[in-house]
Amino acid sequence: MPFDEERRGIISDLNRLKIENKIVKFSDVSHVGVGGEPYVFAFPRSIDELKKLLEYITSKDIPFWVVGNSTKLLVRDGRISRLCISLNRIDKQEIQDKKDHYILRVGAGSSLSFVIACGIKNGFESVEVISGIPGSVGGAIRKNAGTKFGSISQFVESVEYISVSNGSIDIKSKKPVFGYRKSDFTDNDFIISATLKFKKTKPAVVKEKVSAYLKRRFETQPVNTKNFGCIFLNPSNGESAGKIIDELGLKGFKISKRVRISNIHANFVENDGGASFAEVYHLIKEVKERVKKERNIELEEEVVIWNDENGHI
Image 1 (cartoon, rainbow, N blue to C red):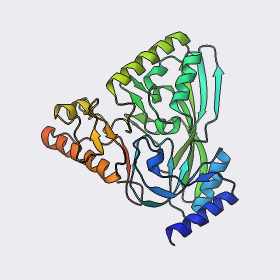
Image 2 (cartoon, helix red, strand yellow; image 1 turned 180 degrees about the vertical axis):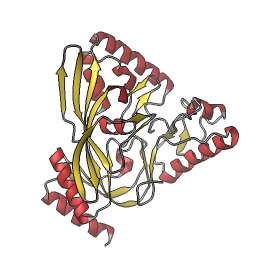
Image 3 (spheres, rainbow, N blue to C red; image 1 turned 135 degrees about the vertical axis):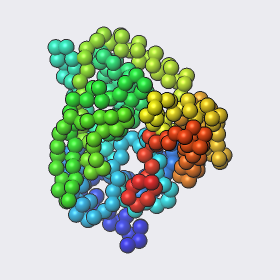
Image 4 (tube, rainbow, N blue to C red; image 1 turned 90 degrees about the vertical axis):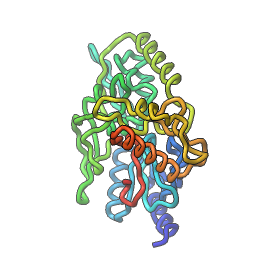
């Protein structure tokens, strides 16, 4: 079926199901400012709506992607025969004040900046280790987002998620198993909420630590450009990917006029405006090949690359 005809049918069905939807290009929503146009973005506002949406999608066998803030996504250009489910509207928030700690329950679409704001207001010990990360809670947990000082996994008590398998849609809960920038969630698991636990400390202490960290982040990373944070994971030998790339003289390196390796931090790609998927992808590939050739280190992308019809490079 032609793309436009398929899109019209999907939008009509979503409107009938009373699920908010909008035609959006990834280049307008992803942090690196690159990507094409899927059929439509759907915005379920509750777990019930998300389940209803997944039941509709699976019954119609419609290919789909689930996205949060698209912080770490590099998506191909052109028309994309997929429906995109955005979890940004699933952002319920509840805080409980216990004797020596706080419990924060948040929807997958809640931003990490909201968690930081709660931490500053109430006094969440060590919350500064995830400050400055622009993603959503769901994406952060899936990828165990963090900094060199710590990661979100140290606060996660449990995660509620939907598992889709063989036409079955089940709501489950578990305490995830985490590794370096990864968790044990599969491609068929979709995080919908999380319970986080923070020890108590003085709010003024948290504010001071967050301010100090953000100041350092502004000094060492390109925070005001179109980028998706670190391109590569640090290799298992303990070296810094950014330091390796820097030592090869690749700061500022570009293969086109519109995209380059940052002059501030060598593990960042910057889109100067209008860059294509191919430009960004080939720059990442070139850096990876040079590191392999010069240092015999196989860097692994931290960025999630969606290029083919299965959603993977």
